[in-house]
Length: 308
Image 1 (cartoon, helix red, strand yellow):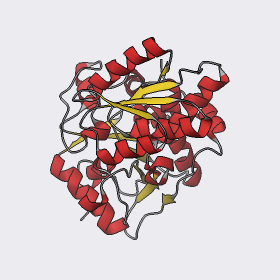
Image 2 (cartoon, rainbow, N blue to C red):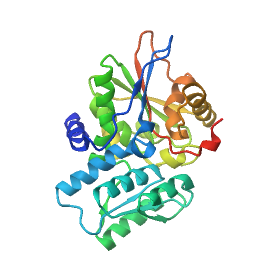
Image 3 (cartoon, rainbow, N blue to C red):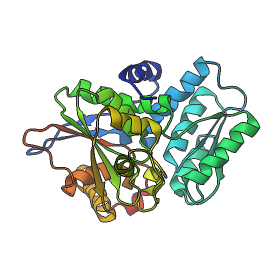
C-alpha cells in the first residue's frame, strides 16, 4: 500500500477548518530556503493534521465507538490524537514510553486523555496499546504508519506548493516516516524529497541499504520524536515510487541547528524538528545554484529553558 496524492487531497477536504494553514516564511536575503512553520500548528506539531484525518475518517465509517481510540507515542502523536479526540468528543488513551518528556505528557493529560507510561521505548508502548485495543474495543491508531495519518501530513506539501509553486525540493525529518510518506505522495513529480535522520536512529537510511525496513538501535537527543525502531511500510513504499536524497546528521549538528533556528529566526523547535535544518547547516545537503528549497520545521514541543 502507498499513499497517493488523491489520499492527500481527500485529507485536505476532510480536515479543512480543523487545522491551521501554517505560514511559509520566504528566504532571507542571499538565501534560497523557505521555512514551513508547522511548529505553529495546533499542539505545536504537524501530527495534528493526520490525527484529525484519521479520527474523522473513522467517525465517518462508524468505526469509532464507545471504546474510543488508543495510540502509542513518544509524545507528539499522542498529543495530537488527544487534542483531536477532545475536539471530536472521542475517548482517548495514550501509551507513552516511561522516558517520554514530561512537557508532552502533561499536555496530553491536559487534553483529557488517559496516559499510561509503559516500557523504555516506543516499541514497548505500541505492544501495550495493541493489547489495550483488543481488550477494550478501542480503535488502534498508529503514530505514523496508517494511511489517513500519513495523508494528513501530506497536506503540508499541498500548502507549500500552492504558496510557492517554484519549490524544487522539500526537506523533512524522518523517524517512522509518516511525514515523509505523506509529503512524498503530494510532491511526487512536482518536487524532490530530502529525508534527514539522526545518525542514532536511521530508519530510512537502513531500509534503503537493506532493501526493506529493518530494526535499528534507538537513541539520541531526537529519540522522543524520531525514535522509531523501524521505518513504516508506507514510507518505504514512498521510497520505491521515487528515491529520496537520504542524509544523516550527528547529535551536535542537530543541537547546533536547533540553536540557529532559535537565535536567527526565533523558532523554538524541538530537536527532532531541527534535524531537517541540520542537513542544510551542516552541509549534509547543499542546494544547487538557484535551487528553491522548502524546509519543514515540524514541532515545537520542547522545554524552552533549554533554548540558548
